[in-house]
Length: 436
Ligand code: GDP
Ligand code: GDP
Image 1 (cartoon, rainbow, N blue to C red):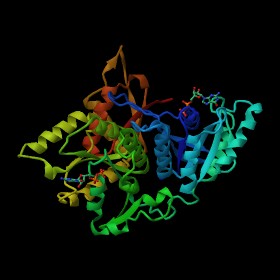
Image 2 (cartoon, rainbow, N blue to C red):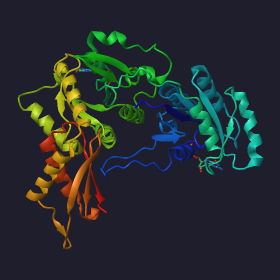
Image 3 (tube, protein in one colour):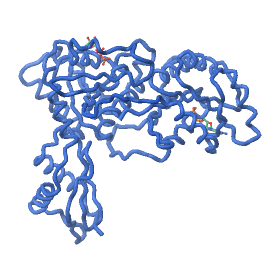
Image 4 (tube, protein in one colour):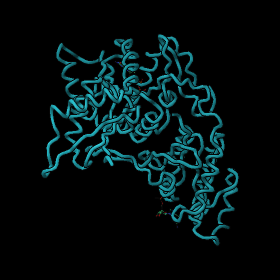
């Protein structure tokens, strides 16, 4: 699951988002409408010549009150920290600037592979404007026009040519990959340490300069696990660390590489808008989910406090009704031993496959008990159902008229499937097809 990451950096207005959109292309995610969730186009997926990768537009992460040069430095550092290959975009029309040189310096020092794109070369006559950029010391520039889509293929050839040879070569297939997400200071690092206990010595930041060195493998009771993205959790003291966009970006990244996502909430401070946003990403990505309320030691409580908090979570995260909630303290270690079994359970449900005959019994029973409502004199007929995918489980219903399958009935079927088969901790999807 761990794919290479490409970060786009460059001054404002050089064309980063234009190029980002070209690379990410028409692959828009299917997301449900959930109020309060705005989609920042900072993070996407690219595909080129059988390579799949993550793409980040660092230009969207602004650090308030920083002057341009400071912004550029922070964005270049993010690119270095977060990516395997950096795509540095400059503007061929305005020529080289001080900010370009400052960025180039950071990139050269980082020793990360860099591809230099000189943008806005919209026609052949403008190609000469490319050559001054050799002075940046980053190798051959590639002339492109983001607006007209020129040179983008050659640019991507260079990018994928610089991907690390072996991403996760020794990865254990049976390992459960999980990620901890949540805003800064919610206790992610503390929880990683609490889970690892004395095994934490194996977490090393020195190991290699490639980003894939940041996954932390460990075993417990015969089960292998990988904590995804521990370096992202550990990285400290950067100016950008506390910006919301950066922490959302981090979360998206971790979600993409994990099977199980733990959304951490601060028990002391309660639920904030950002918590919902990142939980929403994990839900949309179809990951197994656990809601973890941390710092429970610091909460003034009586016998009703936990139930009240649980109710509040259910109200605020209605789309996560399937996710178990664990109250714990990374600091005191309370209920930490219960966490791995929950992770194991939701991971199992995430890859659960239901036998077709058993599935159809359940669906037909449901239909017999509660037939689909009729719509303008027509009634939905479900002929049969089959599970087409796991992680998460996806079911397809073959029906007479897909338009007759309404959201409320899908909900009803989902509830029945959950009652029958469990599926605690995993989203499930129900699709319909017209039977020919
Ligand atoms: P960003 O701030 O680096 O993300 O830059 P944008 O992608 O928002 O582009 C800034 C401006 O440059 C927009 O007005 C774009 O339409 C324009 N632009 C982007 N790529 C090209 C290009 O290849 N040629 C020309 N002429 N304009 C471009
Ligand atoms: P991160 O930014 O999400 O990685 O958060 P940290 O793990 O660095 O924790 C932020 C702060 O919260 C630190 O001062 C921790 O000591 C504190 N903290 C973490 N977990 C707990 C907890 O369970 N209880 C209490 N009282 N404090 C905690």
